Image (tube, rainbow, N blue to C red; front, side):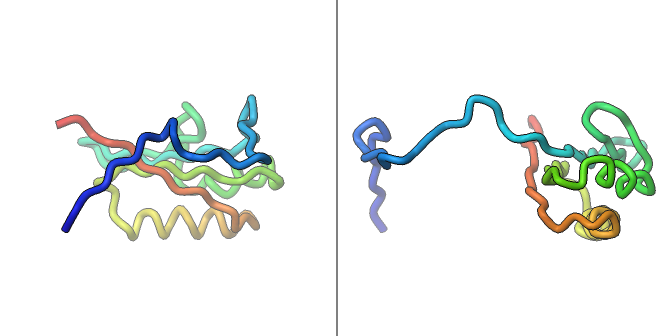
Length: 101
């Protein structure tokens, strides 16, 4: 199998491409894995899983950005997705973060 490296600077750019100066507003929900178990956050504020739907309903026109620690189980993610769905939101962007070590 061969590898091919491409210099990004030499790639073509679409004539209609644009970078937005500020990203659109999003409801950010994070699930962290800690020694005490999973913790849920709305932005920087710790919340209970039962509050997720209330938080999402505050701005129903915003997409939800769901950040998940890599060690959080799929079952927990499904529970949070149910809460987001119960709030009437189906537009969810997933993300995770790398853990050092």
